Length: 218
Image (cartoon, rainbow, N blue to C red; front, side, top):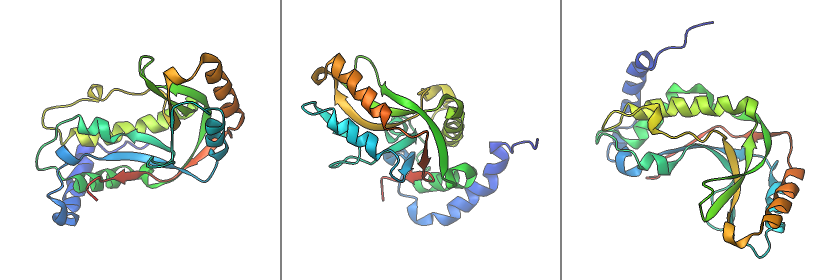
């Protein structure tokens, strides 16, 4: 097995080329703008699941992905919120970091077909609103975790103070959120019926587009 190049060896030429490409973007500081990395759901494989979510939550306070001002269904790799909670050096440009991530992690540039496991609730049990989403299959979660680790490694290199992987809490179950529900507005029975009907609509696999590296300044 060939040895994977170290980040330090790869970064030398790629970081230089990124800077050459983004001279016009040096005023978009990563520290205040942030970045998010996610894969949009490809095709319509979860449309019926979204329909079941809406059908069995009549009268329930909810937010459905893809409706109104909500983003569509996607699998988060690194969220904008968690990036904005970190401090980065003032010289780090959001676009230069995006270029570096894009250059350094080839798998992000390719779509994926990935197995799924079923519907779960996500978020703290004490949260007022919880997400209902499709869990990625246990045997394939390492693919998402590996990409997340590589993105975080690059972000850490631009941190104002030293950061490690432990500074980025891991959601052990990567998932695609279908929507969020105000938990006080749904009974235990309604919740069980909802999850059961959503599970009945699920395919064995879903298709994910190549990763989107989102610069909020654009």
